[in-house]
Each structure stands twice: as structure tokens, then as C-alpha cells.
Image (tube, rainbow, N blue to C red; front, side):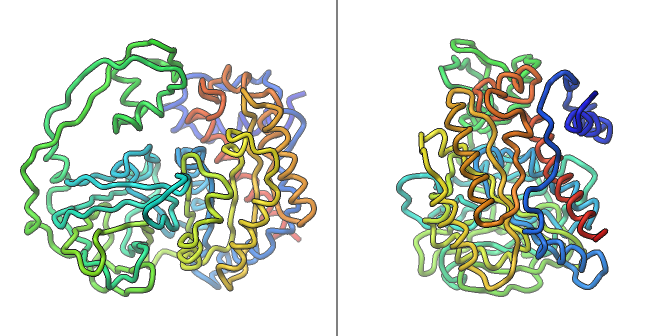
Amino acid sequence: MMNRIHIVLLYFILISGDIVAQNYSTPFDNKFDIGENSLTILNDHGLDVFFKKLDSLDRNLIDKVSILHIGDSHLQAGFGSNETRKRLQLRFGNSGQGLVFPYKVAKTNSPPDSYSFSNSEWNAYKISQSQNEFDIGIKGYSIYTTDDSAILKLSVNPKDSLDYSFDKVTVFHPFPASDFSYDITHHNNREVLEESVHDMTQFNYKVKRGDYLGKIAEEFDTSVSELKKLNGLQSNFIYENQILIVLKKERYSEPVNGLEFTSMVNSRTDFDYHSEFILDSLKEYMFIKNLSRLKTRSLQINGISLEKMNAPGLLYHMIGVNGATYEDYYTSELFFKQLHHLNPDLIILSLGTNEVSDNKSYIEEDIGLFIDKLYQSTQRQFSVLLTTPLDYKRKSALAFNLSNQILNYISIHDLACINFYDLFGGQGAMSQLQQLELAQSDGIHLTAKGYKLQGFLLASALLEAYDNYSDD
């Protein structure tokens, strides 16, 4: 008899026909045994604070509920978080896209839900780097420029039917807002910055050991889909010494005329570590225009939140950083100073893979230090939900050990948890996930299809637990 997870996999395909038609070439293998686990959230009573807020939203007693999902490269990819956000907002209402970041300007892989570009070069740091000159902050990344003429474009880029236009923008920065002079502006030509890019230069790239398409795409500021299209690839599989065609952008030297940009801000309120802008109408894209340096030597941005002012519903903020660990987050003071502004009702922690990569044998203390700082950073009550990392092909025994440590921690501290490790097959499952095209060739990361499935399962687990709570 087909177990419950097989049913979930089939249901995911059936209700996601639009996604399947566009991105899925291979159906799931129904013979794949993920085990007899269900979508049950362990210690789901730990989510009561969150569920009470959802119930109040359902009954129109409040107009916003906020989820903060913190993780590593699995989350930064954006495919899973987009699926979770979409499912939850279809149920509870869409209050906006939440936290975004100009990943492409930072020269790292960008989730598919937003797009960024600039006429200037920006330097970037991330929370998982061992030494950082600048404070990193809420999104786990920081970009900065000393160019007074810099203009940064950010646009929403939804891949589904949800409308992520925005009329409230929050910009996070490491110093008081009065130290920075910038404006959120409009230009009639949406592509004005892109038009400063010269023709592409095409050349051949030889695949090195450890390469995968996402890594190569990040290096050359492109996307996996573009690389596959350019090289006629039908899957994400590549091999050492394979020759791939890549394109490199060349820039013009002529500056963009900053006088052509007009402010679209009705009001601005400055705080210690962020500024809030109310726009004149709903927008799908904006330009942040650097005006001049004041007390600081650069314009620095730690993150941007996009919201709809008059749209009751749910905000789902994704914070994912390549290479990040529990320790990377809890040692960043600015991260916690900015976190309380997001008013989280639920914080989801999806970390552990990079502890496996770093051969760290004990992580329960790091989990405790991080969660303690989360509680200390805000006076607001919120729920915490942990997830276990998946199998790690080359270090399967250690991944098993660390996942068990997370389960031990949530048992001792009575916290909620979704055991994705077991749900996706447990120890040694990565090979099977690769065969189903749910995992990439590196034996660590999932494919877009795999991440979408994981995001769907997360949303389904929360919805099922909330419905059971409501019935009680």
C-alpha cells in the first residue's frame, strides 16, 4: 500500500500543474521509499502562540502575521521558501513579499522572486565569512558603495499568480538613518540601468571538480536556467572537464543621468537601524538613488522589506545565506538589533548542513545560544519551529548524528520540529533523491523540484497542524 508520503508527493504534482508543466520533466518515482513518516509536527503545541495569531487573523481581529524563516544555502535558493510563502498566503492573505535583498548586485545566487541591478559596483559581505569589515544585519548579507552616483534597482519577479507589488519599503542599515542620504525613486524606463550593459562576451568554461550549475551561475552573474538553455542541457548534471558556454556582461563607461529619476515617496520615518518609506502608490519596481555621503563613508544596505499597506494577511520573511551556521547568526549583534522590527510570530530555523560540512560533532550548545538570543532580542511572544537537515552524501553518518542532536534538543526544551531528515529518506537517501532528480550532483543540495517539494511539505505541515488546533 502506498504510504502517506507517497500520497503527499502525488498530491503535490496534482495541485501544482502549472509548475509541473513549466519546470518538471520527470514525474516522481512512486517506488521511492521515504519511510512511514507523516507530516506531523513534533511538539506542535509549541506553536500555540503562532496559531493564536493565525486564528485572530482568520477572524479579522488583527491584520498581519509575520513568519521569519532563517537558514543557509538551501533557503537562499528561494525555491522552497517561495512555495511555502505562496501556499500560506493563498490561505491567509498576501501582505507582501517581505524581506528581499539585491543578491545579484552582491554577486551571489538570487532567489527567483526578486531581481536587482545597479549602474555601479557594490562590495558585499555575508554573515558566514570569518572576517567582516562591516556589520551584516538582518538579511545575512550587506552591500556597500562609496559611489555618490550609484543607483540600485530592485523589482519583484513573481513566478506565480500572487501580486507582490508594494507601497511600503523598509530599508535596513547599520547606522542611524540620518547618516545616509538616499531616496527611493521612479524612472519611466524600467530597463534604464540594464541598457548601460554592453554586448555579452561569450567564452568556454571548463568544469572543475566540485562545480555545479548554481555555483557557475553565481560566478558569472547568470541563472541555472540560462546556462542550461545556452548549453542545451536537459538536467542539472555536469561533469569534470566538461566545456560549457558562458556569457559575461561588459559595461559602458557612460554614467546614468541621475536627474531623470523622480522621488515616489510620500513619507519617510527614520529609526536607529532602518528607515520606513510610504510610496505614492503600489509599485513593482523601484530605484534607490544614492544622493551624497554624510557621516559615513559609504551607503550600506543590510536588507529591504516590501509590504502592502492595506492588505491584511501573512508576511513570510526568508533569510538564507550560503555557508551559514547557527554560530554565524548568533555572533552578529546587528542581526538581533534589526530583527525585533519584523515582529515575528513564528521563527523557523533550518540550519545544520554547514555544521556537517565543517565536521562539527556537537551543535546543541549553538542551537541554545541562538534561540536564547532570539528570545532576548524582542519583547514580543513568538513560536519557534526547528527543521532537521537532510542527508549529506559524503558525510552521511555525521548528518545523521547532528539531526539526532536537533531532535534531542527539541525534546528537552519542548520545541516544535519537522523532521525533514527522516521525511526525505534518512541516512543514505541522497543517492535515491539524485535518481529522482530531487537532489543535485554534489550530494548536498536539492534541485529546484526538490526544494519546491520541501517548501510544499513545510506549508502543508503548518496548515494541517493549524487546522487541528482550530478544531480543538
